[in-house]
Image 1 (cartoon, rainbow, N blue to C red):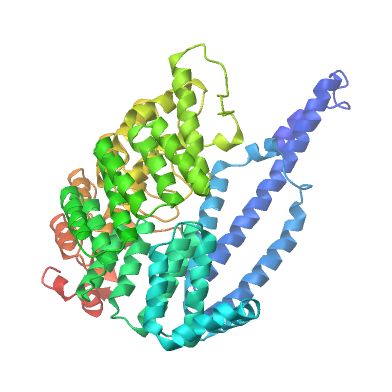
Image 2 (image 1 turned 30 degrees about the vertical axis):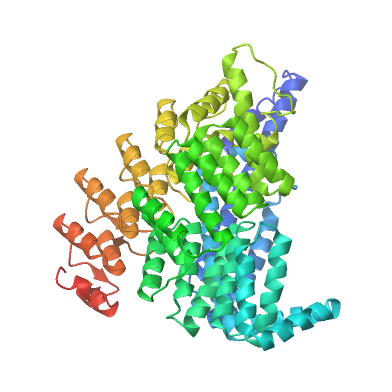
Length: 619
């Protein structure tokens, strides 16, 4: 860059008075921009160094006591960083021209490290949260909150307290029924939570009440998914320390795992609940969903229909009919879907989420624009929410795309309701194409966007492309369409995952196999996390995919090593740590090195310590 500055200096007034004023102005601007870019890049590299040090400190935290010391070190580190940053001051927010000069690999690494720091902070928040329950801190905050409310609503809260003392079982049952009948209002959810808080001020270690608190966080996750699912899992760890043999606890854990789209963990949680003789509605419901996720759709539907014959609350029946409505849409049975949806609405009316989500399904799964718009309008009349506005936008975009594709001369950017696809609210519309399972609708939007010169590999705020979205949702036909139109199957998002890694991580086997057929790199390595397709498949216990990758020549001795790790870990070790006998046998038969060590222990020793005795005869 310095050489560039010197070369431009040749044409600045003193050295070359013959240059025009405009030329001199352009050159001076270029010199300033280049100098600012150098400072800005140095600033980013300094920040990256600090982030790596911060990440290293966070990774050492394994207890609340350790957190106190690390927190002090991090504050000192950040203070030193702020002092160093003063030398790189660029005069405020950098310009677009300066931003464009910065090396993309540097920006990508910064983004990746920030995401890893966020993950570590969530893990530590979990540790801190569990300790908060154990040391009474959460109880203290809850009691203070309820005491304040007694001053505002004394009669109502005293009546609740009397009801708790008179019949605690019936009171708790009424709260559970209130959660069951919830209709999507956040205010309503908080009112139910207040009743639960009052119960917990009197019985703070009541496992049944704490389980219902998990239900509260699960419902609240529709407003803030990540934060409240972390709260759910934190609470799970605390309740488990009180009663590890509580079957309902693992049913709620199954629900949280499924909302994280971690179906492997959901299976484990559900099987643990089964082992503990769980026999609730939600246990059987999630069991049916997991059966369907494994690809046994007919069996799963049969389980749902059998569950309808049980003595259920109307809101519970509505949940089943809603699932049946979605399944019918997947199968192309529009009339059956409409009938199931109607039954769900009759049983549990005025639930705006049901209408809004069904609108999205009608559009994305079946391309039913008018029906989707009708349901979305019903949802909006009952109460709006974030995703609903996105659904409305997609409906209008599909309508606009249809008109544009019908006429090569179509130039009107807005429709009768003022929709404008060039407005900021429509960003990442290409990414959303990956969410359309209905292939004709996907084509309609895709071709209209191509006509607008929108990049097929457009990335959203998480770095996901349309390919990532299609892989996540298992939209195989859409994956093929995007590939045929020239979309890349190797773009990495901010988690440094390609669509193939994404599909495997989210248990979308069909999408993963199709991406492999389309030529996706089967040996790709996520730079920061060090994950590989076969490594993720082993971790998820996906025998079919691992077998396919081995057949294609992927080594059974593949290692995974993150940038922060001193040494890698073989996929065989991963299978042993998981206790997956079938996977261990498969890898050994493919030539995996059985002499690998786990922290100085042989594989047999590690399996014995972890309680995986079933592996000893094959190791």
